[in-house]
Image (tube, rainbow, N blue to C red):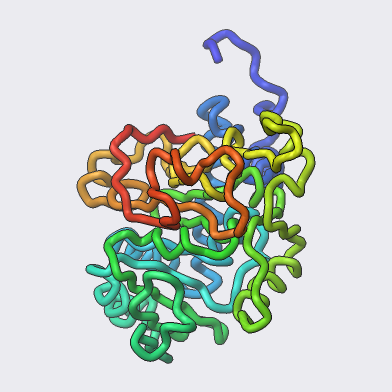
Length: 335
């Protein structure tokens, strides 16, 4: 916008009205709006930061301390908590907030959550992999559940590695491959998740937890499919199969379950809260998400292999490996 250019009609509105309008935008609209000019950036970013603060306030009395501790320990919010942030829908927030912490810092996070007066959370239960391996997520060695406000809880998952994102990437459904940290947030499958669609394998009769997960997603108006081509609008945007009677591979849309994915690739949404003045050097040095050890994954959503041989020729993950800690060496481009 040049110095002599006329103001946008939206910018000529009272600040209170502009704030009200931006607060009603969905996440893609907010991200787009904050790239237009500095004034819109400030309005849109204020909404995102307010949502981040509101998410923490649902469980603790001091959201600033909460996010500060998560930043120090390189931890992230996952599960339905992160999903509610991305959808900008408070009704999706769970009773139990899931936090994922690196193996080397998980114990520190639990101690700080208990010792900081403004948080003063108390331990309710501790589950270790040796005795609870059937109920703990992949790559989780220990889960500590803390009592939060209003009879809600916070569960801190400690990993077997120093990648806080690997258990998130091994979620049985694409709708939960997301995270929110003190500095950034990411969505693994925005073209599905933000439209309340999810890919995932259908549960066996004995998988009660997975049945409960899909029931919760359906309750929140999600549509569930085991294959992306079951939604025709995605298939119409992809290259036809050769021969045509085979199922199409949606690799070009980053929706092929067999292709490797990582947070920050072209099919994901990943960005920081402070675009204008975030300290990239400090985040890199401290290896705080989205920097440091991350994860590459492929979905465990189908027993049918890709018709384009994504498993055999994938450049990141070997055949039949569903996730692996990785360092992404390229410079991050934030939206």
